[in-house]
Image 1 (cartoon, rainbow, N blue to C red):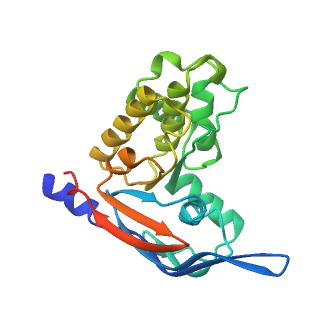
Image 2: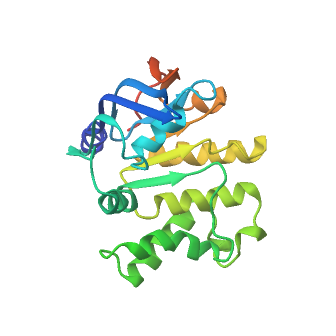
Image 3: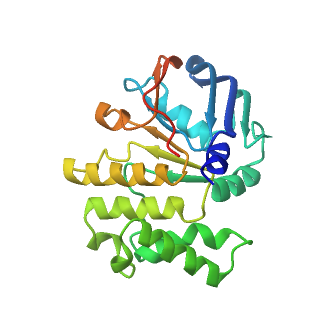
Length: 242
């Protein structure tokens, strides 16, 4: 059984080939990403680090199919997703990619359970009853079942981030993208959130996290350092968990 799990985790999930991203403002070109070549295996846990403005968030946006205007090739689960329409990108994001943001991005008018269920409501392959099962399962994973009917304003920052993580994992995506997931948290809540990400990775979740925090980065199994739009270092920190 462990061998099967290990083989699954070793499957190539992400492949970026010669990626370039240029922003043009007032006839001035800014090269946000230059000749990016990166592969991510299923089950890996990556941290992307580097100074402000180096291209970390641009790279994460690209991985999340939030930015279409790029040069180069992006393959996700073996499928070329480099030049899809907006609707096609939206469908893939909703099914295959989960997002965790620094600012939580919860809808204040919706309860915890409703926030988590909302992305699933746009998927035709998941009915109402199954959505409820998935919401309950994700709430249990992040230990927030007791807060299902509360509103975001009634939660602490750490609890809101746990809800955001539950929303990200609820549809069982292939890839979790986390943008400074502890940036708005105190040290205690940050530790709790990072422990939760460790747990999810241990269960086989593929995670790619942008962070300025070296302590958080060192919890990943692989650290990618970006500087001036280029990958300048790619180092492993520990073996893939099985």
